Image (cartoon, rainbow, N blue to C red):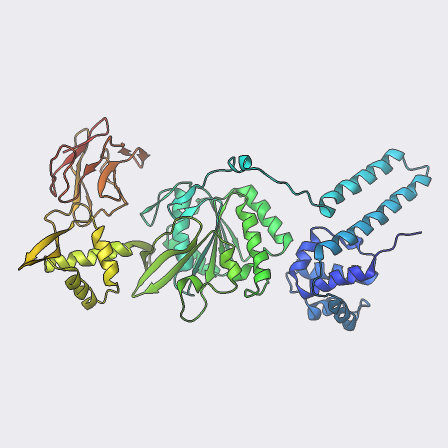
Length: 544
């Protein structure tokens, strides 16, 4: 007696696929056409696979057309769809159908025992292959780990220091048409060649990049590459209009296989809406989509997903379009906004330390596209304050605040006080007596070696002077003449030489901190002035 199938279970499973196409991707990883016992369910399942391979939507209309003339009525499809019910346990039904299928296949194999022309070893081999192929799909082996295992995990490591980390999922959201794709390419290029993003943030792990673009027209992409200096020989791999749908297992597994082949450090998806067929506002559906991105990141790559803001006003942390599970499924959400010709880039949600906001300027002309670093909000504010104080020296906070308002600079007076309190760019404060009381006034010191002045370096082995104008805090200052030293300014405005070699410029690490900012003396008690020379000697010490 032939072991029967369960037509009711099979109909429910097909109905689940008609209700939610994502269920088909889950089923395809376990069941095959021949696992169904019902001829009609088998035929419908085959038609669903055909639609999937055509990258066509799967619904009652498309399925009816695919099955036209094959003996399955539209009314029967409606009936099958309605057999799906709330609380349906997809994995249980898959398991039951698979088990009955295996039993029938075993029955067919054992029927061969009575055939003397078939070797017994062949029957055993078929049985073993069938059982081996079914075990991982019909049972779960949950592995628990201990804290000791957790400590064997790799430590967090940056891809770009400090904002972007290796092996993470990152969302980059912003309004349509404000330069998200161009800013992303400006991040990709330093990753490809090594160096600094926007001349400011160090790439700690250069390597190949995979760009998966479902939005940018071919001619536009070519134009951007040419104007941004992305050379033909760079290890940038592109999947352009490939129709990838990561909520379908067939695409996800193919993409992961490609990632294993080319080993990128950075994978860009432009943009989220193009890579799935789900409703962005449904939490359950988007949770599965974000889970697919996590599976990609678990290959050790950094995932960068471009996404759009919803229309209208609202807090920045609620601007990303769609379900909250989109932002909930990432490690960091970066956002970009535009005002008065400047882009503001910042982290909105992060599992790491917050980043930004920083200002960027997008310059586009017929020959080139540039993304130019314009400073942090604090740096931009201090630059305005410095200009005000150079024009009207010795002002109180309230007077500075009034002058900023006249310049249409939006800042609260409390924020201004906090920024001035921690300023180290040559703005000095002191108590000034006015009658019987005192007031705090601010002024620009005579020397501004850090934010507004210049650093002068002498080559350690002779040669001419090299000048680097307008260095800024936390940024690398390259003394570009051959053989001269390269310096970096730390967060306190102290000059420190770097180790390593880059582009023929020798760099050394100083043995101590040496102040180059106004009003600060070095450890020998010597106050330095703008324009004076210093040398980095063979042992790495900076002298004046």
